[in-house]
Amino acid sequence: MRRVVIVAFPDVQSLDVAGPAEVFAAAGGYRVDVVAPTAGVVRASSGIALWADRALADVRGAIDTLVVAGGAGTREVMADDTFVSAIRRLSPKCRRVSSVCSGAFVLAAAGLLDGRRATTHWGWCDLLAESFPTVTVEPDRIFVRDGDVWTSAGVT
Image (cartoon, rainbow, N blue to C red; front, side, top):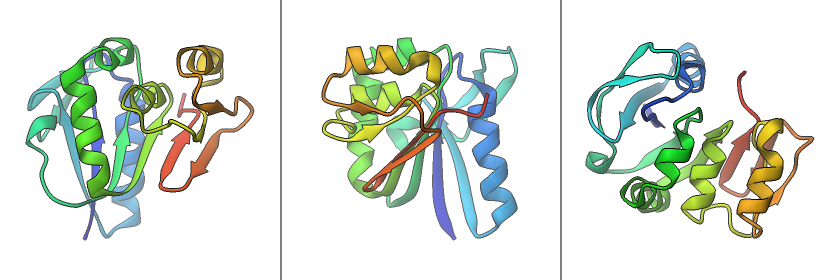
């Protein structure tokens, strides 16, 4: 079983969590864990309650794919040193690190996009490029793979 860890947070876009989770579940052969700053209920931007299996700080062991979701709460978590440090700590344990939509901002805040090509939602590409000048933002792409880091424009 391959291990996928999807990172959620308060005001996450529920599609950015549920979409990848459903794809991996349908493919079979994957174990999906949803994590967040704290274990338990995480409210999405729509108000829907999502469930985090464990706290981000408690994630241990090898990870095949780390998926950082996006959403309205991205601004708050990318300014949270503990959250960003946890993403940075996990990245060497991952075969691949990825983001959905504005989750790219979290990867950039963690330094994981430095010197790499990336994308995000078209409406946020200019801000990503301005905020993180070491990232080469590709605004016309819906998906960018640069080595073991994958970013996507979003599911919305």
